[in-house]
Amino acid sequence: MKILNFGSLNFDYVYQIQHFPSPGETISALNRKRFFGGKGLNQSIAVQSSGYPIFHAGQIGQDGNDLINVLKKHKIDTSLINICDIPTGHAVILIDSSGENCIVLDGGANQKITKDYADSVLEHFEKGDILLLQNEINCLDHIINQSAKHGLNIVFNPAPFNKNVLKLPLEKIQYLCMNTTECLGISGKKDIKSAISWLLTNFPETHLLITLGKHGCIYIYKNTVLSYGIYNVPVVDTTAAGDTFIGYFIGRLALGDSIKKSLETASRASSLVVSKAGASNSIPTIEEVFSSDIKYQKPDILPFNF
Image (cartoon, rainbow, N blue to C red; front, side):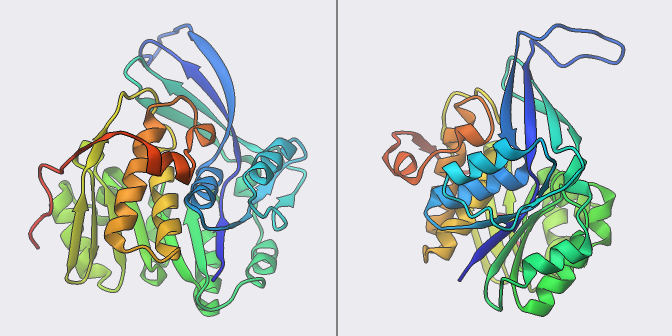
């Protein structure tokens, strides 16, 4: 079984600040660093770090060779990446003194993917393979429809959430991986319990995986409801925590771990990420995940009763 991540590739410019600026306010950054990111790149590195090999497809500009090099450094197959004449995507990330972040994203080459390129990528995969997607590239409707025809198992992380997600053929998704914002956005509900109930009614054949911040995470598929808590670590930077969770969960599941064990490993990995600065560079190896000495905290409000 192969895993393909058809996802974004970005340069991340990270600014450390004391507080987020108000409208009209100008503030000075404490420092600035450049990292390699994009939800696509982050999740590919997380899957590979979990122990399962992955192919990455996506699009960069002539200025993006460093992104290919960092993927190759992690032993990720980059043979399907397309280099075009459009500048590589980039993100401006502001991180305040508490470790919270806000992000401005310029899609660049990520938003110029053609149907022909998508079809050429999907030709390399067959029924039973896994396709991992996020909401940072264009052409998603075509990719989902064609992947479903190929019989691929589709994992979709609708992040960052926008109304375009609601136009996608979500009924063809096998695994829908969301945080609270994305869950509420897709359902149109105002509280998480109502949102999950709506998703269960409208997508009864879909595996739901929802991260809930300090409340841990919850997995629901038909009559199976599992929850898992968090690990107490000092928060430095929450960037890539969700990407690491998803990548590790899918990777460990593909390796044959149970849902519960995959949730545990993914939670440990994402907890380690927030204790370091940066995005892809903060994703731990599986050896670091298994050897880490961090304290588990049980979820205090889960599971919900449905």
